[in-house]
Length: 157
Image (cartoon, rainbow, N blue to C red; front, side, top):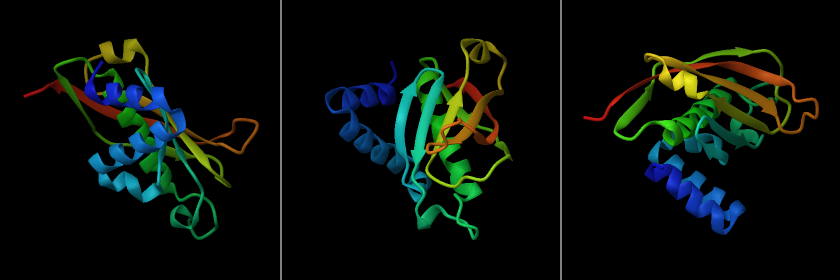
């Protein structure tokens, strides 16, 4: 288990809600731009990362929905959580882009989900991480944004 995943596990084991808040703040300090959406890490495990973003005025666009770039920010953070939890020892990762399709409005709070499979990590890099965003308040699980983030994995120098 790498250090980032070990810290998440340690913090959430004692007090899940408080641990998630503390870990979310620490993770956002490492990559400060993430702080702009006030993210909360919901899941960090191999092959899966989930980040929640509450709808508030700071992430809204001109029509009152969650801004596309705020969603992209949450998706990149979810992918980073997944990558940190999955990357083999002695390796490092870096995103090589992002490709998103906005297919529905986002009227409320959102969850950004990133997922891979063990087979993805066995491929020659770069390979893609599937990402999607659903509204936490939408009961039917409607996907409002979906896409991919290619990542490159290489040996640490």
